[in-house]
Structures are given as structure tokens and as C-alpha cells.
Amino acid sequence: KEPAPRRRAATGWMKYAAAGVVVFLMSGVAAFTFLSPNQGISITTAAGEQTTQSMADGSLIAVNVASNVSYSITDTARHVKLVDGEAAFSVKPDKERPFVVSAGGYEIRAVGTAFNVRHRDGAVQVAVSEGRVEICRFAAGGELIVLGTLRGGEALNLSGSELESLPQASAVPATQVA
Image (tube, rainbow, N blue to C red; front, side):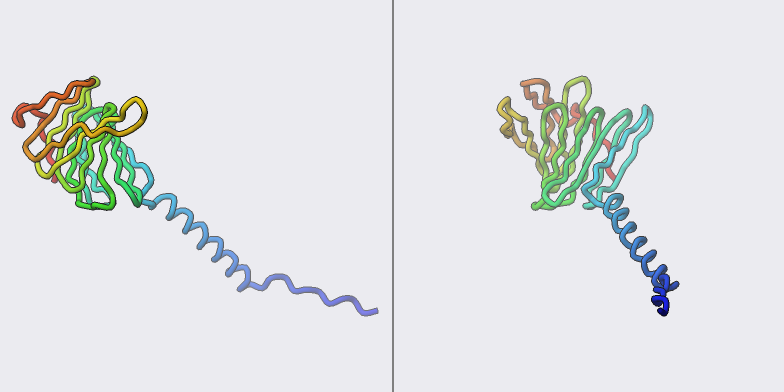
């Protein structure tokens, strides 16, 4: 009997093709993981440090000293959480994706505007330089209640259940958004 023919091992080009497919798939996973606009991004500044960051949608966040901010962008919303500190926002209009800032149990909603939010010691202050924002709060049952609307030149102090209108001059000092 003649021995069965031996199968040839994978030729050189097959090895390179397999390696290319693996590299292609891994780079796609890496790009999706690291470049996806809906990934949460955190910004923390120390005492004496300020920073301005452009979001993927073209909006700008200017974070003031000793502040902690995080944000994410999805197909339906742009959400910012001001954990502590102060930030100013220059929001690119996008009616399909509202711009929402959460601070101290409140939500500040904008579509295209410029405004400042300060969250320190349990109090939240909002000053609007142009456009308008809605001030909202979640009720005990989880439903979102619109408390009011601020327009350019208006400011509000939100503390617990009280809403105190502030003159623009004594409101939150506007952090410059370039």
C-alpha cells in the first residue's frame, strides 16, 4: 500500500491572511471601545487649575477650580454630571439630543445656549448668559418636574426646595468659555 498523501501545512500567505484578519478585528474593537462618543469622560481640576474641553458634538465645557465633572454623549442625549464645583457650558444646538446637566438633585436642560452651573455645599446656582434653560427636579415618585425656565441674563439659586432669583451681577461668576 502506498502511504496516504500528506496535507500541506498552511502556506505563508495563509498565515499572513489569518494574522491580518485578527489585527483587523482587534483594531475595530479597540476603536469602538476607545473612540465611541458615548463613553463617559471625567474631568477633575485641582485648586488653582482650570480647563476647557471640547465635547464630540462641538459643545464646550469650561471647568473651574476644584471641580469634578463627567459627561457622556449618546444618540438621544448629551448628559453632564457636575459632582462638585463649577462649570460653564457653550452648547451646540441639537434638538434631537438635549444637553442636560445634573447637579445636586436638579437637572438643567438646554438645546443651544451658554450658561454656568455651580454646585457647592449642597447648593446649586445657575446663570444663563444667552439662550434659555429649563430647571427640573425629580419628584419622590421618580417623575421629572419642570420648576421653571431661565433666559439670558437671569440667574437662580437652588437650595433644597427653595428657588431664589438672583440678579445677574451677584450670580455665579461666569467662567469663560472660549
